[in-house]
Length: 340
Ligand code: KG4
Ligand code: ZN
Image (cartoon, rainbow, N blue to C red; front, side):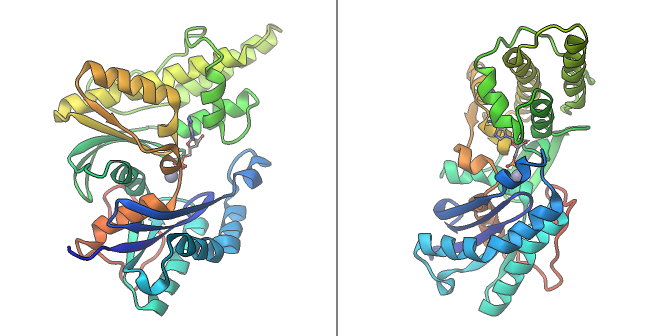
């Protein structure tokens, strides 16, 4: 394609309202993120009804700002991309309806984007020469997957969590040790002051060949440990708990991710999703990758957590294949990876 393709992308699947303008799936002209974290912190987690209302309140302004910062007008846009699943249905609907209205009134094509594919695509922004095939570890608040991306839009799920997502486990453990929401970044920070070998939290054991995860066991082990210490009236070292929990999670993620690279004989692995900004995970993945000559890729933190730029990238690769949304396009809260 000779002409540059500019996508206006919209993301509203959880607690961030975001709009971005992305050129050719790789170059970000703007990426405006309006976070609701401060609102949901009061409740210790995302309240779906509140999230939908807040999306409605800010979406027009967020889109306007994205165009302004990119110095483009609606006329300059080639297509509109929007997350249509997976996510909270009421939250998704705000973005989907808004994008549908825009596309219809402007006479521009609309592209529906799978949120998880969006997370993976953040790596195309960070690494402008990156092309499939590669293995990707997707670790967010709602999802944990090991995926083989064979081609654009072509995914094989190699492993996934059987219970809690990695980010969910971080958030739950953070709450238990009084760190508040969202817990991931707080555990990441506190762990730096703790001893990761202080407490041995067990990890789930599956069949040797399985690349699946389970994090509810380690979460329960932390809760049991805290209860036991409280009953014995012994002092709890929160930094040691955070660091030891983090080690159990990171070891599990890294060991399965490396197994997946060996199975697929790939020399690069990308990490994606909110937990991909975790400093211990990044370090441990790089160490393990270096030993095996596997290049470890990850987007800058702002592209790891929910944002519309990653949606603009994924939308571009669909758009150039000619995939656009049908007239009955709707939100699909439980949309599976690779599903259309
Ligand atoms: O990808 P994301 O923004 O939303 C979902 O699609 O779920 O991920 C949010 C999750 C939260 O669970 C948050 O605690 C976690 O990512 N997270 C982190 C870090 N930063 C965000 N977890 C561990 N370490 C971090 N530095
Ligand atoms: Zn996400």
